Image (cartoon, rainbow over all chains, first blue to last red):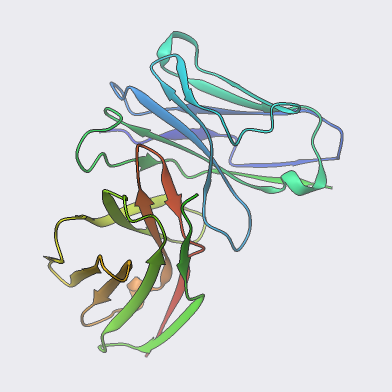
Length: 116
Length: 109
């Protein structure tokens, strides 16, 4: 079974530029998550999708971050414009069904963003 | 909201046991998880425990849960150099996972 795919793996941009990340979850997984992991911290949930609908985006800085999951499969996360404090690893995860017992989330390798 | 805390570092000798500790604040957390993160990689689920259990064993891993004290631990028996990584504790209330800051485990020969 193929895992969660993310691209690019690394991205370096200057502040005020825009950037987009892409995630392809495990086939058949209904739930998709984007996390932000700042160096030295644990992942923090930015947004959760169930199929193509948003379940939780309470911690997404909506003035600069946006995400979509068209057709309930792939997802993109965009930052426009980027700030220095956005430097982090952006992790995508998927799970078969939200709320299921155990409900393991499978993580991709992440995209490391550096904002200069 | 939920807060999950862990110590930052642990150093052990190869072959010894490692014990990584975690505390959480939300007593309604239903599941508690341990994830492993190796350099440049995503998180890998190691094991999880349901809140009505107090112990779970899986090969070299033993999870202990003290629900009264909201304390979770992960014991790794016969620790190997390949176990060197960052270990994250996570708590789930509804469907949101709250992660701790991670414990960096260093195994030396």
